[in-house]
Amino acid sequence: MTDQQSPDDTRVCLLLGAGGRLGRNFCRYLGTRYRIAAVYHKDGDGIVRHQERVVDPLAPAHQSPDMRTYFYPIVADLATPDSAERIAELALAAFGHIDLIVNGAVHYDLGPATSVDFLERLPYQFTLNAVRPLQVAVEVYRQSWQSTPEENRRSRRNVINLSSVAALHVYPDLGQLGYSSCKAALIMASRHLASELGPAGVRVNVVAPNTFPAIVSVEQVLATVCDLDSGSATGEVRVVDRK
Image (cartoon, rainbow, N blue to C red; front, top):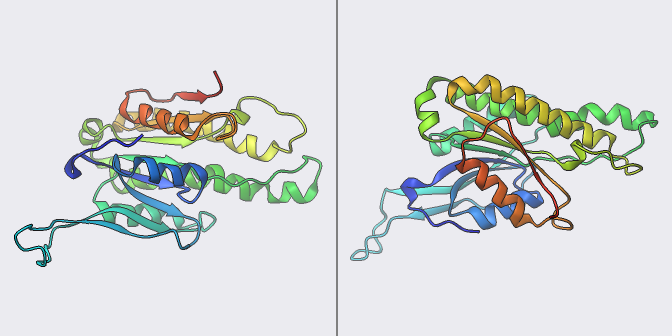
């Protein structure tokens, strides 16, 4: 799953949900394909900033000023109103540009539609699963992509949002009203965003997998992300399901 590239050619990815199942595997398998600004919900032992250092073999003790960050962790609570602006600012400051945004952020809150308590928590679920990730993409556009349409096209800049087959089908009696509604909203918002960002040379697509790794493999989901990133599609929903 790794893709060796020279540092100068490595694309920069802003990854939301780096501490989740998709995020952890994205960093594990695609860490040489992308330089990653990885957004975590909270600090933890697994968050370490990695760097590449240029070493002169004739003088290995000499500290070269050319140090290249290729993994940059950002701790941010997406429930915080100003988190989208802050995430975009930090990622752009770390790498200078962003080529790809992968939204793997997810918040599960399962419950019956008839529960008053569940319905009161629904706005929070929409914020984390749909609203704030879209705001992050818009902040990157506002702070960087908006003024560079030709560069965006050359660099194949795009947004990939992780949805679910639960946004496309009803699975009864699993308490998925909130989760599936959020992911369905994310699909439609992504399609609208694809239309609006198209003139700026930015593509927006969605990956909608079945449960992974139980039904489809993580590798299948990551391969779909890479395929969308390297392609030309926009406004597309790519379903990943068992054959």
